[in-house]
Image 1 (cartoon, rainbow, N blue to C red):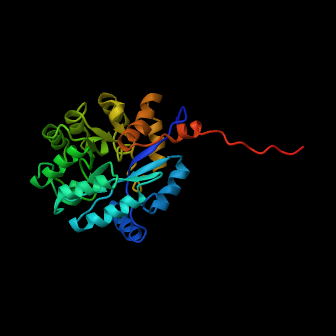
Image 2 (image 1 turned 60 degrees about the horizontal axis):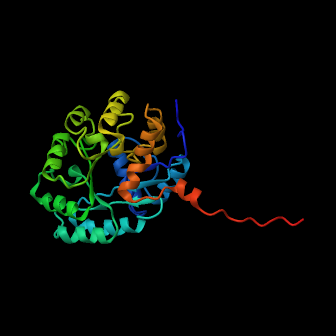
Amino acid sequence: MQTTLPEPTPVFDCHVHLYPDALAPKAVGELARRFGNPPAFDGTVAGLTADLARSGICGALNLPVATRPDQVASINAWAAAINRGPVRSLATLHPDTPDIPAALAAIQVAGFRGVKLHPEYQAFTLDDPRMQPVWRGCAERGLFVFLHAGGERVFTPPFRTTPRALAALLAAHPRLTVVAAHLGGFQMWDEAEAALIGRPLYLDLSHTLFWMSDAQLVRMVRRHGASRILFGSDAPWQSPDAVLRAFLALPFTARQQRQILWDNAAGLLGLTDPVRARSDAPATLQPRASA
């Protein structure tokens, strides 16, 4: 099984969940109980940074979710504080945020590239009238929207973000840049393959490896195009290292691997290639040993 990259290719994990140090033990403990599996690390920035160092992954994107509108400001302030170096973060928004245009303006000023939304935790559908200012505002400001898609391990059907609902959102808002998690629909991959493959959106691979057949995953990625696929682990609920090793065992070309593991994320987030940055740096003169 191939478990190493064929060339110096940086890897960026586009789907992780982090919590402030004071909240992480309670949040991660409760979610671990509900998910029924132990976390790969403790859900803190320090825990993720150590895990990345062990796996050789150079960075990751935090995806925060506000379950109440009064949480938006504090979560975004914390997300802005960690949005640097190897750990980046999106902002969050809630459909009941009192002044959505003002909130989006503040998100843009703070330097965020996009917004994470989770229709199950935040109780909205994609055609909800409350969400129209979000879709319009993000499109106008060039902010991308990262959406949970498909089923959800701690919720029950019917689910709010089906692949067909995503296709309707894209048709209604063609200028909106969308990233749909879980290859367009967790445990709805037949519908995602029929409704979303080839449409103008990004799909991430979080919670697909180990959950769906490799044959369908590879087929969907090839048909959609590697230039619109993002590597993601959904850490701490899956191990980034284990997910990366499983991805590297799939029959993708070196070019496809680089697009999925780095290039697409770098384009969305404005990342600098750390491998190239090191190679372009001027050599450091070493003192000559005395004779």
